[in-house]
View 1 (spheres, rainbow, N blue to C red):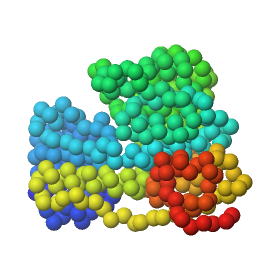
View 2: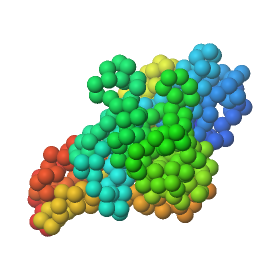
View 3: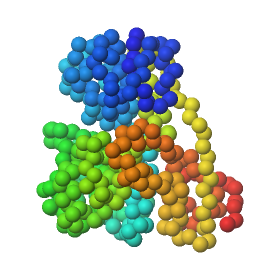
Length: 378
């Protein structure tokens, strides 16, 4: 048995060698010639798994260590009996952290009061649900848009895009990228959408770059229809429009989901999917990642709830550092992703039980943080 694997899937090396010949290659140079006698391909989103790559190969199984599947030609795989899996949900906590850190950093820098504002969440799957929880904890009014869920659950809890255009102060996207059908998301936010906004909005995209028409976005920012932006995913990446990046308030190189725990989850899902498909006898494998228990200290006596929350997330994830790296080297987009120093998730951070403003006691555990019985007087 032979497996070809992207050499940037973390924690993978040495795991499957007992069961197969494993060839590790950079995802952007994997070609048909590498797959001619391969049984499985383990990949990331950088590798386009289509007819050009897969035809006349022996690949029977593809597993991607990503939540998205728009790099996989699903119709071709179905027609040629190639089974594929993704690591859907593996980095939901990481993207929640990115969203929260970004929104708080933006509100602090530009003096945006979040309480009482209305946010439209477009796409309410595993990540969108977590974002909904964060927004409610921050005191935002929430509008949900998710047509597939609405068809299943009824429209009582959901809003149309037109309602979001009319009422939202903030819009955030958490959609897969689809190019056709009634749930098409390619250029979901286009010139027509931006022209229909009733007031300037904050726009956040950490899902897929091509869900937004880049030229329309640039026009909307220049015309004042978009007031502030956080963009992690870019149409055409790794090549991005520098003139657009220069207009973005927080710009990052597609790393919203890049926590150590999220990456470990993705690799575990890949390994277990391969083991299950080929009946390797490997059950519930997970990588051994370094433990972490960082204590966060804040002065509960001098900080308000809002100030404490800003301080906590600045220490957990200082998002402007990633913004500065991309601005310094926009032509190194893929290298910045490949060599990213993975963040740690909220649940690896502790606060002393007597160390936070009283109002945060209920909110912080819901955001994943843990309390320690140690009492520290600051």
